[in-house]
Image (cartoon, rainbow, N blue to C red):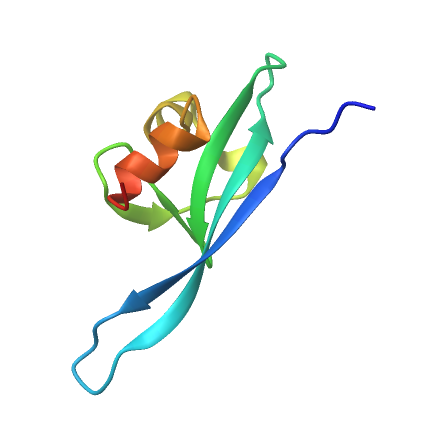
Amino acid sequence: MRMKILRYELQEEVDHVDKPYQRQVTIDRVKQSDGDDKWAVRCGSEVLTKTGQWEYEPMPSNRSEAFLRRARFNSPFDAVKAWGKL
């Protein structure tokens, strides 16, 4: 049997003015319209871009090609590297 990893779930500690808190970040395998698999780093309704910025992730029907180029990674390693955790 062949298995695929679909998601990595991580906890990130965030420093805040009042007190630190934990938030969940996921690295998800996402199928592209051309059939390729890419990876997305998500936290709530935001997605990480290749420049290391968080931005709102629109519904699939509203995602432009430019958005997909900015916010999709070729491997989970590339995704974590952009997140700055390596």
